[in-house]
Amino acid sequence: MQAWRAPRAFDGDRFLPGGATVLVEGDRIVGVEPADFAVPSDCPVTSYDGTLVPGLIDAHVHLVSDGSMGALERVGELDEDAIDEAIDQSLAAQVAAGVTTVRDLGDRGYRTLAARDRGAAGLPRIVASGPPVTTPHGHCHFLGGVAATEDELRAAVIERHERGADAVKVMAGGGFLTPGTDMVGAQYAATAIRAVVETAHDHGLPVLAHAHSVTAIEAALAAGVDGIEHFTGVTEDGALLSDDLLERTAAAGVVVDPTMGNDMALVASMPPPPPQVAAIMERLGMDMLGFFAQRLVDVGRMREHGVRVVPGVDAGAMPLKAHGNAWLAVLDLVAAGWTLAEALAAGTAGAADACGLHTVTGRLRPGLAADLLVVAGDLTAAPRSLGSPLAVMVRGDTAVSR
Image (cartoon, rainbow, N blue to C red):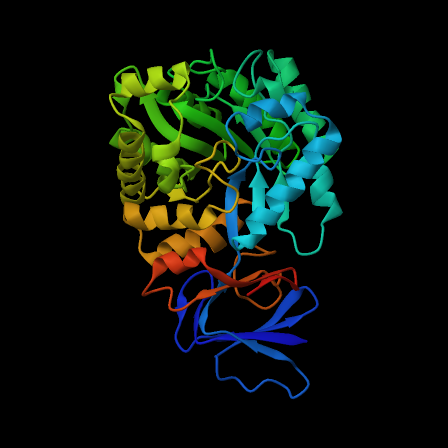
């Protein structure tokens, strides 16, 4: 048995008065006690002058991509060895930033499932969807998940079930980074997405829908998906998320991941956006900074309407969305109106619940995995210290120690 101790702690739901001593046996938490708890004499204790929290969870990543410009698109040209190398590098970057679990929502050749099954010590746990289901020439078609008819859609879901996927990702609408896709309309009708949902649920799999446009969001909602990624609200008249749409999303219990966590320090150094993205920005009547500012406003409105939100980054999609930016996604919730405790809960326990891992990780609780993060100082006084890990433990293995 070993113990980690800190004078300040957050258990996944609330800050703990008096800090915490977390007792670990093997890969499990076996006790959560106050910071002044007298541990057994034969139990080594590592004490930190910081804040102890559950490991962060990034609910939307692409491990196959390193996040450089065009990297995700280039995955279609890589062999398995190159993809596996990218996955390992992405996982290493994630854990270095305090992330102990990732949900991968788009790979190629089911390589993230292979990495998940290897379960390398000291690297984050993986929840994997395999290649995203998309239309011919649709968003991320280069990842190999093309399905056009309802029969093909059902077959695609069954294939993912047979390969051992943890979830199904469907591209309900177009994407910023795939030229020629429809960013205002939908790639699939609600009936087609419903075929995905029904088949997935029959096989015990949740369905996550990529949807930037209101049309795609509406199709996904009507189909009964479990979660919607991005939820941007693009229309012909700009970005418009109505109160009614937010109310219906909350009532349906759909989990929204607005894919925040952009590194704003890099915005000025970014090259001009590709033509299709520039056209969307012009249609929305805003530049990149204006777009991100509007996203914060909209995410704040999600909270006001009771929409269940989890922070994911879309890590690997572009330089602003680096692997390891999960802490920024949590702080974006704070900027949008969440309390720090609410935002931390969303990025730990809430994300674990959304990923189907509520009995596995996400909280400082006996019986759950020993996925721990210690950050410098008092997190309540300096929230950005969330980006300064002193130590990270993944399933009982110390992965980071500074």
